[in-house]
Amino acid sequence: MTDSTALFAPKFFYFCWFVSIGLMMPFLGIYYESTGLSLPQIGILMALPGVLQLVAGPFWSLLNDALRLHRVMLPVAVAAALLPAFLISQTHDFTLLIVLVVLYALAIAPVPALSDSATLNLLGERRERYGALRAWGAVGWALSTLVSGWLVTRYGITIGFVGFVIGGLLTTVAALRLPNGVPPNVDIRAAAAGLLRDRRWGIFLLCGMLMGASSSVFHNFLPLYLVSGLGGSNEQVGFTFMLASLTELPVMALSPWLLRRWGSRRLLVAAGLFYVVRMAFSALATTPEVAIAAQVLHGPCFALLWTAGVVEARTLAPRGLETTAQSLFGTAVFGVGGSLASAFGGVISAQSGYPMVFAAGAVTALLGTLGLILGRRWLVAPTS
Image (cartoon, rainbow, N blue to C red):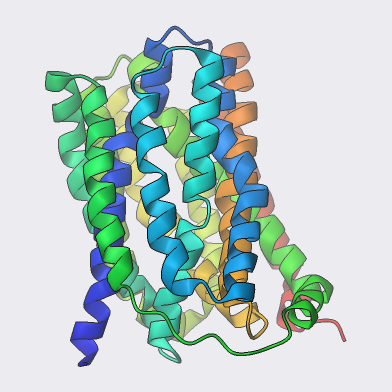
């Protein structure tokens, strides 16, 4: 198998998966609002996937590493998410929505870690090339968000959920083709104990959590901010997510060079500083156009955070727990950070307005950046 042939599988997977997510995710909050739910209830529903990922992500990933389920678990996880996602679009009852969101969240919890771990296994020592492959996810997200606003305006918000199901079926096929390295035969308990004793992980995950909270403010509350807070349109929501995705492409394409030149830790600090600026400008926006313009910093924010974070997690991972390490990073960013942003964001927006949510996002990003800088001596070397 040639290098280009082998690398097609992760490219196709990332493209299909993010097409699916891009058709549905930008309009989840707007859909919940259309059912008559209150902002705190919306915050709970948006927070649930992150809360469940705290347990489900590491559990599925550790089970995957321990039982060597690398080939099976990823396509099963993607396929299991499709029916609950579609049923969400047919439900207005808050209690039933909670049940469906739980089922959906439990299914997708291991997907990022499994796919990233498989890609890094494929790359081997060339792990700095991860960002260039992950960029195909940004391409898929950009294309799907470009058309999603137009589709929702003309065919109703359910079309986004239907698009997720169709894209998810293609993603399941792609997952079956995604190669996985042969995991090493190691003592999982000893590896897990070593990970828990390594204080580098505590600093790394805490700072990732804080930056993830800032990132989730954009995904969860910008659509509501644009439409309900600033009087924008669904088309502008789709355009904003498309614009944000396009800004990821050059950063991810350049990530192999950036990682070789600066290293993953310095890039994580840079990502945090970009988040501070982006959230501050968003908080000060008085028109949809200004809020949209602030999202051109999405690439330097998220693309640096994710590509550098994935590589750093792989570097810190004990042998045999590569997938678990990716899951811990994803759980910190999207699980803990996303849950905090969703839960507190719903309350803050109800009491103080949407701008204060983005101001809080700037503060959390700043704290995460300072944590990386001040905790550098713990990140440089593990405890003995």
